Length: 436
Image (cartoon, rainbow, N blue to C red):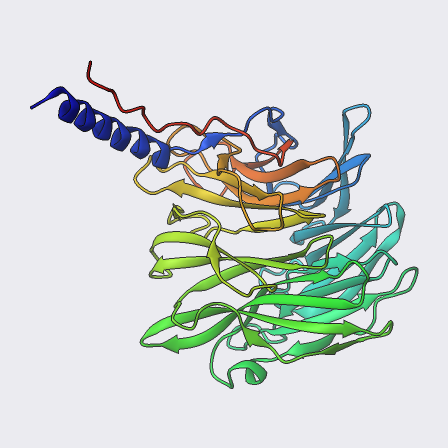
C-alpha cells in the first residue's frame, strides 16, 4: 500500500470518527450567561417567559406544597430579580401560565380549578400585573390551555381548547379577544370536530395564535386528533387564518399543514416575524405514540409552504415524563429561534434543551446548541419557554429535574440568556495527509 492510499484511508477513518462525535454531541452555547435557578423549592412546573428591553418576566405554576402562579421579574439594568406569588389558588390547582407584554404592560393568563375536587372543572383566568383582580375569561371547562398574542394597538387575542363535559367528549377550539382598555368578548367556538373531520373521537389540542404586525391578520395552528387510522392514533397539524375587523374575526377554512402520510404530528407553535411572515413548527413522531423511536422538529413558513426539518437528527424523550417533546418558536424582525428538548439517540438518557436560530427568516440556520447541558444520566431539562428581544438575545426558561426516585416530582424553573447569533467552531473535517 503506497503512502498516498494509506494517507487517504487514515483521513477517511478520522473523518468518520470525528463526524460520529459531532453527531453524538451538540455544541455548547457560546458566551451565554450561566443558568439561574429561579425557584429552588422542587415544586415548580410549566414556565412561561416574556421580555422587553428593560425587563424579563418568567411565570410558573406551584403544584403541591404551595399551589398558585408565581412571577419573577428581572430588572435588566440592575440585574435584580423580584419574585412574588402572583395568584394564590389555595387548595385548587393553578396551571399553564401564559405571559404577554402589551405596549409595555405585563399581562398573565392561566388555568385554575374551580374547586378542590380532583376532577373539578377549570376556568381560564386573566389579569394585568399590578392592576385589579383576576378576570374569568370562561369557566366550567375541561382541558383548557390558553395562548395569547397582541398587536401594537394593544388588542389581545386568546385561543384555548376545551371540553364542556368531563371525559368522552371532544375538545373544541375557542377564541376570544380583549380590545385595549376593554373587557373580554364572550368566547366563541371557531373549530369543532365535525367542522374538520366529522364526528368520532378526537378533538382540538395545543393551539397557538399569532397576529400580524399591523393587527389585521390572525393565524392559529393546532394539534388535531383525527381518531384511529390503520389501527393507530392519527394526529395532524391544522391551521386557519382570520381577518380582524376591530370587533371580531372573519375566519377562513381550516386546512391541514402536516403531510397526510405522517401518522403523528403534534404540539405546534406559531409566530409572525417583523415582515408579517408566518412561521410554524411542530414535532413529528417516528414510531408509536406510546413509545416513540425518535422525534423530529418540523418547520414550515407559509411563504413557500414547504415542510423542512429544523434539525436533521431526532431526539428521544424518556418514557415517564413527559414522553413527547414540546417545541417553541419566537421571532424578532427577521431572526427566528426554535427550542425543543430531548436527548440524542444513542447517547445517555439525560435530556437537554436544544436551540437553533436563523437570521434570515428561516432560509438558513445556525448549528444546534445544547443550552442546558444537564451532563449526567437521569438529569432532565424539559419544556422550554422561549423569547427573543431587540438586542439579539434569546431568553429561555425551563423545568429542571432536581433528582429523586420519581421523575414526576421535584422540579425547579431555570433561566438562561445568550446570543441568537450562534457562532461556534464547526471545523471538524480533517485535512488529508499528503505523502512526502
